[in-house]
Length: 88
Image 1 (cartoon, rainbow, N blue to C red):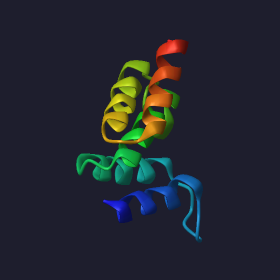
Image 2 (image 1 turned 180 degrees about the vertical axis):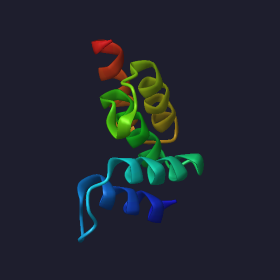
Image 3 (image 1 turned 90 degrees about the vertical axis):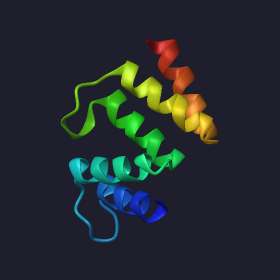
Image 4 (image 1 turned 120 degrees about the vertical axis):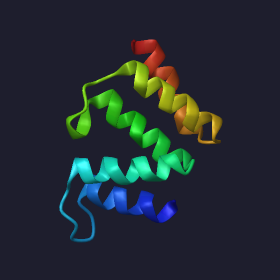
């Protein structure tokens, strides 16, 4: 799953000669999230929160992912969950 997250980050940020591509990044974050990677789960939440990769912005979907990432041990997931709950 970690390699999937790294590939997603290459697409997300346009790193190492890989052209930025939100849809490809979301695809790979999603695959890693399915395997339970908390960083990927959090980043899927970010995509939902910001409406990236053609997604409709959804605080509800974002919050669910952030909580799941937090439950998976990622402190940033809890931070994002709190920020989303506060702003929503």
